[in-house]
Length: 237
Image 1 (tube, rainbow, N blue to C red):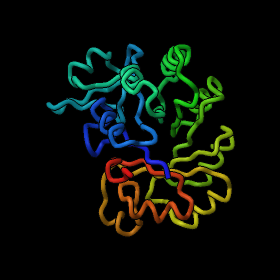
Image 2: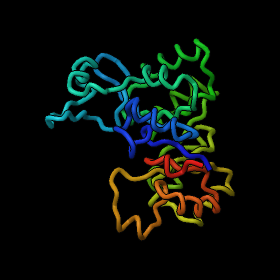
Image 3: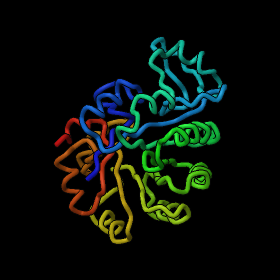
């Protein structure tokens, strides 16, 4: 079972920052997952949300601001290039392009690093946005694409067939042993990811496992390929 650091290691350090990636690498994750968005001046940065929130409570729309403007409000704001330079091929990168974001700035950066010696296997490219994934797959047919879905296995497998990929990530709450086993029989490589917010009742009822090694091992017996976790330290061998 693969252990993938969620936004670096968001349970151990501020998400989508170099500090978070440092923690994930220290705890020997198999891959590092993070989110990409693009500023008004086409700088590719790491952010899960479309708005950046600063300590004063200001909300800034990322696509409406320049990188310099955003950096003033969030000094640890991290760019895609900084992540590439920091990780330096030490661990494969699971790059999630957020829906509606332009792919051209991402492709420009990938072109630069691939030309400099990075390999297709150093990256995985995922998104909820099928148009973005199709564009990226066309640009990089040798880089694995990842279909990201919340709950619909039917939609996930349909999207996967379009892309010629077998890798799917789904929200852990909607996974159950029979579904996981059926996906494995279909040849799919299924990963779980945790919700945005912890919901104790749902966790209790549905057996959430991305942050729980004991539960994750039970799901792995049914065919779960790996977990995207906030706490890679809990899974460290």
